Length: 305
Ligand code: HEM
Picture 1: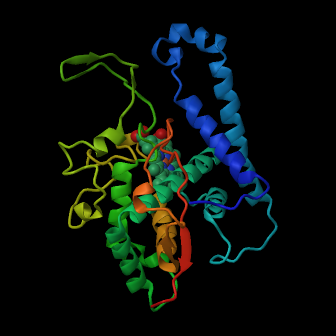
Picture 2: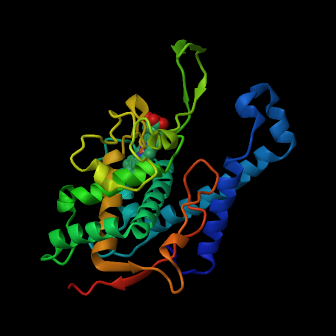
Picture 3: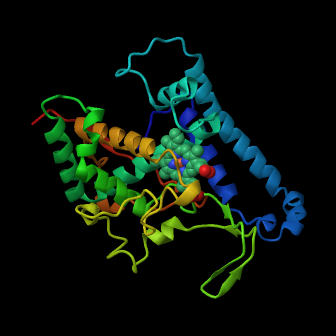
């Protein structure tokens, strides 16, 4: 989706994202041969990595600070946004997870990525878009607004989110893990303290687990018990086991609520001269799945008929 450029903020953010994706996709000797870490320092790569992530971090920190210092009185439904809610949870301690501002900053990214990929796939697949529109508008129609208590009833929208995560997990390699003890996998002996990357992206596209994995088909989840809670290993966008994501439910609810609103209030059209086939799903190299080319759509307010 394209946002207006306020004081160059958008292009600054886009540049920061590009830079961070580029440096995180670099090859670092220290990842594979820790004793050669000095080469990364000598070539200036580590310095560049540090600088880029500090800049990105301070951008997100700026957003968090802005919300913390804002004196504006916000009414729950009109103005509160995701950052306000997370800050509130942090403040009153009601979240089972001890939220730090690093969590909040990471979450802003994953939410944004999922929304962009879900909208990309829906626009490319008009039948799915139609079904999602119908579901949201039929259920919320009489109320004239999306009620978060109804989210569990949006079966098709939930299937859209699962299918989006199967194809475009925001963190394709999850986060690096380390083995605690010696183990044997398919005849390979793995030593303790070995860094393990789990490729959730490849798992979601494995033809041995999925029929036509590359085809966007939320229908595959209708009537299926496969879920992303970490029990079904063919779908693990939130990881699994003890270090799996504890914010899964909140994360999904926020994405679902945002998508339900986008689908309820607007029909989404392509800019003049653009065809559906022109929308690509290219990804910027990096540790998170950012769409390479921005998704530009034209919202038309739904008139209710
Ligand atoms: C849709 C949004 C989200 C996605 C895609 C996501 C994804 C992930 C992934 C892939 C991991 C690493 C799991 C592993 O390597 O096994 C993780 C860890 C984590 N997530 Fe999320 N997450 C999301 C939302 C949230 C939310 C809303 C919160 C908190 C309110 C949260 C808090 C955490 C924490 C604290 C960890 C570290 C857990 C640990 O190391 O023990 N996440 N998340």
